[in-house]
Image (cartoon, rainbow over all chains, first blue to last red):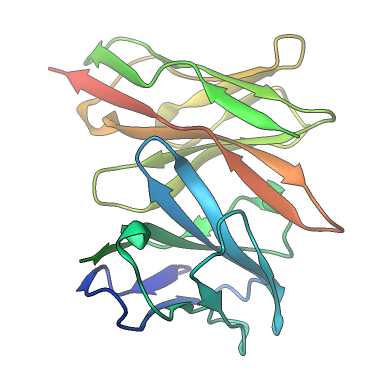
Length: 114
Length: 116
């Protein structure tokens, strides 16, 4: 089944403790992206990647890192999480950044930083 | 810059009655437009998309949307609501940024409640 898989689905952590949210897709998509969803603010793009070893900042990249060493994986790294990073996170992928194909989204990761 | 406005943050309908979720956009050129649905505690699912072909777009689960350039609107409709349609709906426009990269601009969402 074609899908984007995120792990974990739920995570509670403490301020300053490094964490990684994994994202993997099995559709051979070149384009991958991370979003966060917050009440009243909608979805905002954190980082995106056009292909392996090509990443760039979205609208809200502060406090996050990403890497794209393989085509299928696009992990999101929080080196020192803070409470304002408590949010619902989505990974998405599509072909070649041509979003007229539509994105495929993961099921989301609900992160709480205390 | 492109933007998306969902005119209603919350819509409530009775089961079996029509659904109308309104979306206006601003764009300096021909946009690609999408509707996504998010059920409680679930991910985002593509309902339908408009990419400069037919202006009336049919999607999954009986939903459809009409692109009206003169009104800069892309309203989502369904003739008869079902209880399972209760969810959050997002209108999205695709924006071309640097080079070949396209970014999605999201509306803030409309919460649809379906009453028995």
